[in-house]
Length: 98
Image (cartoon, rainbow, N blue to C red; front, side, top):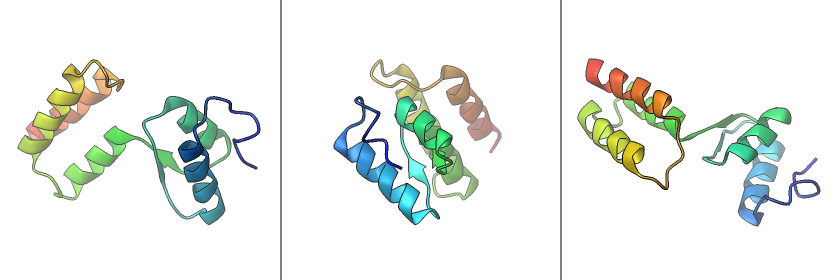
């Protein structure tokens, strides 16, 4: 089943990624779109967001804690970015402890 038929908000890119993740099955749909995330979760598609990815980068030492702190502070202060402040703060704390 696709989201094309009942999600007027979804772009062609959203629908393509959703369909691919659903068909392949063994992948992660990475999105910053809450509606797409909610729809993917309803359809049992493995979905994660930006902060999850940044946390994984920290956990695997793919990015330094200092660099990630700078990125998180920029994201937190950007009015065009809609990420939960509490989740950003939690990841900032993790960076400080690393």
